[in-house]
Image (tube, rainbow, N blue to C red; front, side):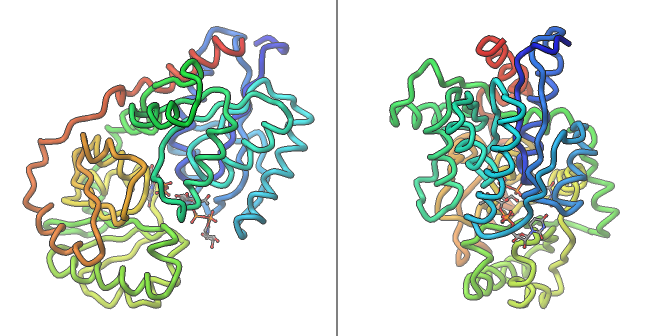
Length: 364
Ligand code: UD1
Ligand code: UDP
């Protein structure tokens, strides 16, 4: 590889970043010899083995070239720590393009630093909008897209939002969904029988994964969520791989008091999707899980008033539900014909190579 080839620096930091970045890194590595050099940064926003390292191992991601080790904190503390670390790094490395993923604090922090240093910025998963200003991710999406030079969209609605916001069409690329590239590449490893045996599950079961601040941070919200999960557990056993954010509040609200609810640590990617694949219904507020259930054809009930991923409703298996309505929706989902979903256009396993080609054309 030529030492003078343009340098792409990928920024990751939180759990959902890893399955989005993996296919892009792989596709860039496969480009013609010397076309683009690349470096992988882990900001350290997520740091538990089960929130981070397990993804590197299972997805074949290279060891990060740099880990900033920023850890947890308030929004300002965490964002500032990522910015300070990246400013030093970018001044030394002088990337030709910075590639950011999704909508987490590490994403917007990298976008701000790249923009101020006048380094071109590419955003993977651009244009998603919940139109909910109370979501920190919505702020991150708006700022990141506003600063991006290349905007990679997963769906036509995202392209339309960017157009409405005045982004020039030639900067927007509808490439499909790299998170689904990763899903399809590992499909054979998602072993529903092994998951069932490992968790000693018999009969029908639901998987619940929840971590949005609006659901788990405040005591009253956590209590309302637990009440809803208990009502749902009257109908079907529920296994809950619990994100660390809500662990204390949900346990304090009595999550484990129902005999049909089982708690686990956050699961590795392969183990989690094996469990999801074999489940009868998923209850979530995760962005990525709405997309993955759409492709796997598993009914998904999203405990949120909105979604930035409407294609998972129009094409997929997703439905927005309230806490009060959850038990009834679980009952309905258990009766649903799982063959009726469609996979959204371009969610075909080739988003990574499409992104790599655009980067090559733009920067090599
Ligand atoms: C972040 C993202 C969110 C994304 C989620 C994916 C932001 C603003 N939010 O939320 O969009 O959906 O990641 O999982 O960037 N913690 C641990 N171990 C870890 C990481 C976190 O115990 O490895 C705990 C800490 O108590 C921490 C809390 O989880 O304070 C929240 O972590 P943080 O990264 O701030 O936000 P998430 O809720 O994970
Ligand atoms: N995931 C996982 N183990 C779990 C829960 C989720 O591997 O216990 C995966 C999930 O399959 C998806 C990603 O983590 O690939 C989504 O991350 P998360 O829900 O934390 O973030 P969001 O998508 O909501 O931003």
